[in-house]
Image: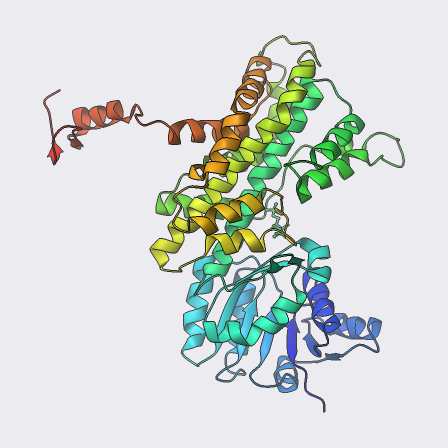
Length: 466
Ligand code: 6PG
């Protein structure tokens, strides 16, 4: 029997598309799925291609050449642990097992250690780009050992999206580093989606624009510094008409945002190590509040807001919006990169932030033109504490800030919620304040709880009889 060079476990949308992508690069792939019909159907539909369907995990392991490279695309959480329990006794020293799902990085670190005992390399690999990315070129964020990376590199580089700076994959770092970076990617995704949604709301309610008109605005923005997958997608979505009613389909979508948990994980991880990611947290809260649809509908009849005529904000708001969105987006990436740097320091992952910016430039959901200057910022100053301190980023925000402040003021004055925009601006204003009012906070803590404080003019801890 011909051996396969790669194995794929799990033939859901992502697993199937990654298997097709890998095979299309001239790599023979053995596949296994829990429901055997899926395996049979997949192999049947792809007759003539270098796939081998296997009926058991034992058969899969038997079919893939040693050292094995096997990718699991199965739901995160307990299913991964159950699968590892079944695979660990079957795999051999030197084999590489990849978890391509959105797993919690601490689970990944634990699993990596557990498999290392038997000499098996476990790689938690972030995969971004959805269905299309998986098939045609995702952004890949593998963690784990350098030995595993050496074995995986040729295949991962072949299947990843590409830019002029190479394939969108890099060895992120040891242990759970890859999954951590993917989690933060999703946190940035949440915040950027929320910023776009708020900007859209301002166009709809503030400027009184139709969905079709906003599509044209998004399309125009996408030709400038805001160019990104999510802006391009928004333009496309706002053009779609419901085939039955003829209305814009987006207007028929219930305004309750779902979430699978990676945004929450980003905020939890940030809280855990004390890195501020207020805009990601605001995006998360916005989804939570949106889900209270029935309560909001009831509250809308009792809670008063400003009496503003729809569309009264007009031209100035529309002119200011792209600059505001650009400045806020810079702050979101600054928060995300600060979180990755902080975690990398604590866990000793030695993550190269410029490389992360490089591999996010194509294939993934948050791909954006902004990642080019961000990459330049972190490659010219590798230890940069915050992206906002890079001269080009600082200039970009300075140039945009009048517009940004007017946009937020407009939202506040008209009662249109702009939590992500406002927290991004508050982040910027706090970070650039040499003196903040937390001296009063410290005085309060010392006064009511004798928690002590430090003085600006003397070293050491102080306590006063306030
Ligand atoms: C990606 C996406 C992907 C998925 C998110 C959606 O990078 O391809 O981020 O991982 O779409 O998990 O997350 P929510 O369901 O939480 O919005």
